[in-house]
View 1 (cartoon, rainbow, N blue to C red):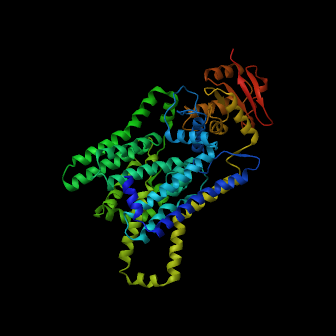
View 2: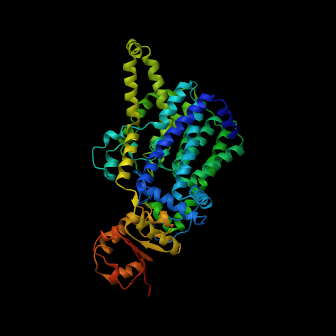
View 3: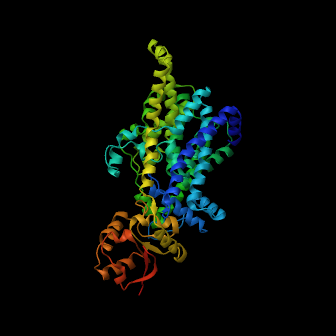
Length: 547
């Protein structure tokens, strides 16, 4: 496959390569602007690395990088107190070891690799496109659409920003991190690398499967296996798309292709090995099992997805059927990929929404194909010929369409600046220093109690366990949140019961800052079962005494 990619790269002209570099540089630079603003804005406060979309997920990634940075080969779910064993996470472990070797911070490392993987991803996308469109003009248009396009979700934000409104009303392009390529590039190295793996596996299937040796199939299976470790949901996509594609080809050709089938089995078997590993973890590691059970990401209404793709979805409808009927094997495969992915979004699985990862790729390519089909039809109309000669009308129409295609991305960039201006992703230096104290003084097995907002941040900086943090990763999150925020910190009574609760839940330290004080009138200084071990102007840390 590597030799094949080199040949494709050589087929590009120098101007095409320069175009790809300029576009890639531009889109990735745009994703860095809010980050640069955060560093300027931070002044005396500390920027945690949060973002407008999936801020809590960033903390999880940083916690695993930090854990590996401290010398661990296996990572843990640091957002729950239940017993657990470490598990393999090659992406975050690799970034953590890089951070350790270079002395670069986990946050800098996260974005450094986001940019590196982003360049690789965009170059691969253009190489892939070059095998589909012979016209350089349409290659460039497709690449620009993939890099910048969003949907019409901005026009659905007419209600308060709540989880309920997101799922019921808002277009997915303003909150679904895997919703389009720009959001993927903006999010983290995880989704970028996962889509690189998806693209390579599917591209190999189209271009190399028939002629490839079994050893090459095994190598592609290793890519699938790696993908299974970093983003296991995608194995469902690979399995479904490849098997449907093979079934369609078998029916069309009225012949069973044994060599092709056996090579697909090799790819899928190796890709599925991490699923077996995680299945075993679910039974032997309670801390991991709770996360797996609670990690429910159901799809919103189909209307939300349609709005989320906007003009891309409309053009896709014009391109998918001609692609299905086309003799072009790339268009055939892309049509199957897109249709199967749409069906997976509503499959009877708890991770429906995750199965939309990478869907933007076939959607955009088929949408541009649909645009070509439409233009070829319109060229026959006399009215089109007249309008096409009117420069002002044509330019205005193009600008309106471009704005509609990128409007939600503009909204998200603006939202990032707004939240940074409000310091929504920051903690004070006193809070940071208290968290660093945990890192320097606690054993790796000890558990910290705090409000859930600061609990989401503590592992990202300290690499230590918290009792209450990320909503999906904290076992029995709703129960724990109620116990902590509506009972423990709410009043200053029931000390005997609270002490027994602390011991029963395996909590070793209590973090008490302004956020915890705002929950009620609990006064830790009056508790005989708490021992003050650290204090600054804003935060006091207590150790739970064990009799």
